[in-house]
Length: 344
Image 1 (tube, rainbow, N blue to C red):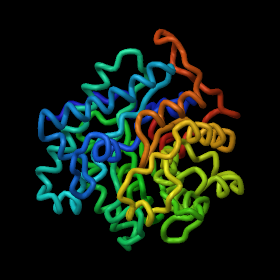
Image 2: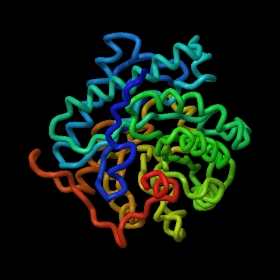
Image 3: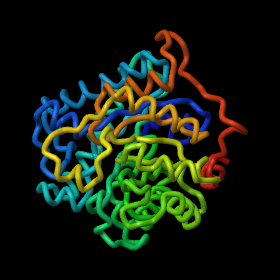
Image 4: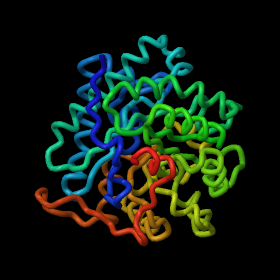
C-alpha cells in the first residue's frame, strides 16, 4: 500500500498570492557548469547514483537558500522532464525503470523539503515534458493521444506525495489539453507551460493568448494556472501587452537568459547566459503586466545567479524568521472550476 503524505495537493499556496521562487535551467547547470553529459537532455538518470543525487541536492539547495534570503516559498520541480516512455526508451529504460525513477525523484524532493529550514511553503511538483522536441511541434498528437501518453507518468506521480504536476515546454494546445485531462483524472492540480518563438507564438503558429483560451475552453478551465517558459521576455512581452482577460491565468514564468531563437539555441556550441541583472528587471516589468504572476524561475541559460537577480528585483530581502512574502492580488485569486468542485 502506498501511503501518500501530500502537503498542498488540495490547497496550493499559489492561490492565495504567495510568491514562490523555483529553480533555473537544471540541464544548463549540469552540462555547462558541472560538466555532466546528459544523453537526450535527461537529468533523471542522476537519481541512479549517490554522486548524481548529491549533485542534484547541491543544485536545489543553492536555489532554496535564495528563497530563504528573500522570505519566499519555493516550487521544487522534479528532474523528470524526460522521464516518460518515449524518452526513457532512448536511454534503455522501460516502464518499470521509469516508475521507479519517477517515484525516487519525488521521494528525493520530499526529503529536501523536510530539510529546507527557513523556506515555507515548499511545493513539490512532478515535472513532465513534451513527448517530442519542445522546440518543434513535431509530434502531431490529438488531445486524446496526449492524454493517453502523459497519463502513465502522471499516474506514477499520483502514487507519491507530489503536490501538483507541471507540464513545461509544450508546443501545441492538444498536448496541453491532454496533460490537463490526465492529471484531473488522478485528482492532481496541474499547470501547463507553453513555449513560444521570437514572435510570441507557439512553435505551431498559435498566438499565445489563443493557446491559453483554447486550452481553457477544451478543459473547462481545469488548469490551476498557466505559465510561459523557454523563451526570453522580449519574445512574448508584446503578446502580453496586447492581451486581455487571459493574462490573469498566467501564474508563472520561467524565461530563458538568451534572446536567441530556439533554432539558434539548438545550434549554439557555447552557453549564452545573458545578463542576470537585466533579466531580473525584465521580470519586474512582467509582474506589472501579469496580476497573478507568483511563480518565478528560469529556463535555458539561467542558473542560480539569474534566480537571485529575479528575486532581488521582485521581492525584498527579508530576515529568515519573517513569514513568506505575500502579494495582495486585485480582487483575490479565482480558483479554476475543477478545484472549486474538488475542494467542496
